[in-house]
Length: 265
Image (cartoon, rainbow, N blue to C red):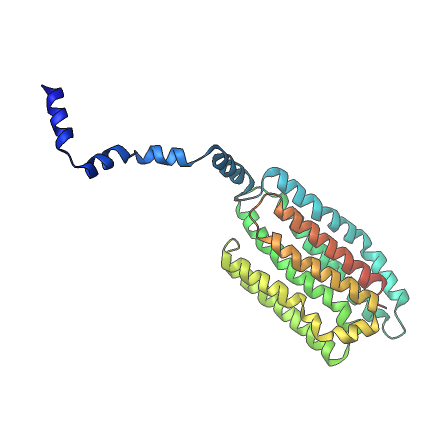
């Protein structure tokens, strides 16, 4: 009797109704069918590559890449001061010595702050504070790099104006970074804009800088390009991207060190 009723119900149904019944699938089954083996593997690999914070191995690499530079600059500080004093012309010995010393000290503090920050345990109040100090030291490293250029090469009102602008931006960046959350997109955007603005103020004195010290000019320009390209990796979420950022900063710092210590005069 039940089979007979099913037969007549099927016979009297519209053809459209039959199509709907036969073509309808469970949404879960459709989702599983559309997710191919390759797609599943791609998502799994992407999940392993993209991170939310540095792993222990990454932090070791981050600490070493900047720790080595910090030790190098600390050891070279007396040498650079003495060399600047010896090679400076009469009347500029003290000024050149102070300028190159400020450059080396500011760079050392930047690498030291970075090394300490990346050596600290995650999710601690101390590391969050150190993250701010780490970024603040970059402002002072950029301003410190301008010090010997402005007082030994550019000079005059233009050199003094650029130097004042650099340190004013460094102080402004310090205040902003101290008051803002470090891990927000807005904070990163403001930080990167200030880094770029401070780093490329040198364009206003390209002519005089090149005419006075062409080798130093090209080395400083190469270092600036390395710093600029490093920002691509600065806020990247891929593993070991921050260590690549560190390598770019290291190379830029080496270019600036060679240019300012050996070819500025």
